[in-house]
Length: 271
Image 1 (cartoon, rainbow, N blue to C red):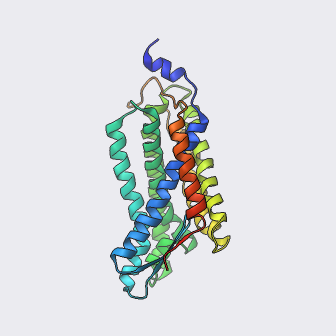
Image 2 (image 1 turned 90 degrees about the horizontal axis):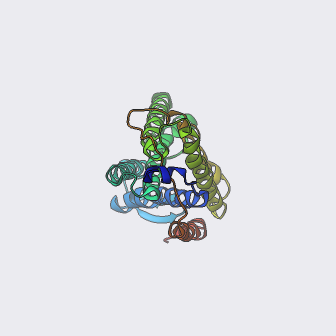
Image 3 (image 1 turned 60 degrees about the vertical axis):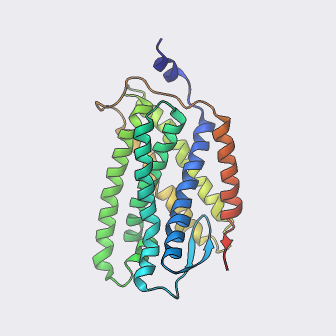
């Protein structure tokens, strides 16, 4: 039996998968809210007021309307930038370290799906970041276009993410089952993390539906169906790798989840 066969025969540890998911989801959120919206607010002359796991509030009285649109757009821009950096790192790292490879794949996928999801969500619902970006433009102009672009990008990103997952799950008949074993627990863990954190937000339950649930359960719902595109492909290896238990990843996720729920969930006020 080869080393690859031995790795492929080991069972994937669900606890570690959930831990990696918690880290990936939390970091994607922090990138969107703190680095994206928060960073743009500071750079463009606004005053940071509130940062939480489900929203960022910028004092925009002293900045122009164009700058306000940039602040609203910056969260999605950072999602795409983070995905690009993570994808580059994933290509370099390969699958020699399976847990790191899975984290990079999931972080890339979450950021891409959330980014496209924001376009789709704002176009269909006329709420969210890109509704603010398009404020002042006739809805009949921007809503259909944004929804269509968001839907197309979402599908493209989901298909691409399935292709990038192949080195981890192999190319045999069980590849889809292995992919679901990685994607579905992560989707559930990420959604639970966001929604539990949102429960502590003092603004009220509406933010749980508009931001927490929409960004996680809605924005990354592609994780539930992109696995059907995993099977086949000339770039797929014969043997899968496994995600074995790692206390380092589990403890790191636990610490990040405590901060994400206990600190960012309740909001940080700057005024």
